[in-house]
Length: 139
Image (cartoon, rainbow, N blue to C red; front, top):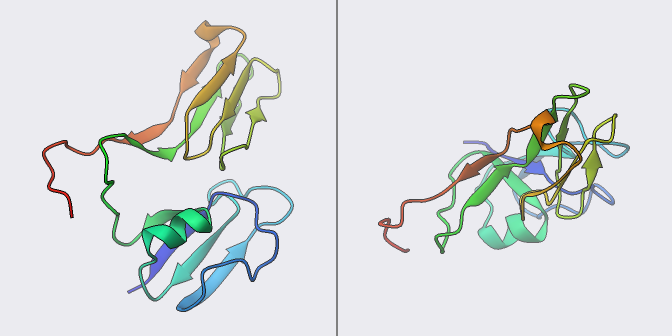
């Protein structure tokens, strides 16, 4: 089975990935790729929660870890500016992205949702979050 992870922070060098089990890595160095952030890595094993946090990796396929607290998990942090039509997405914690007309900015990556908006009637939030059921048993 293959386990795919999306890089949510810009890679410094290709060797900055969790060791062991790496099948392939398709990385973007100049700017984020439209569908894959800063790249996709594929492993033959599931990475630990510590590895995904340390290396800024978001799960694309494979087992999804259950959070240890009731706070939601941000799967995608993005919004659409209705003034210019741009969709902007923040891919890492300090990735502050602004649309072409300057009406909308998105920040926070998968850590927090932050918006800076000049005209609130001209933006649409497209973020995807997951809130686990509070009745799920802890591991």
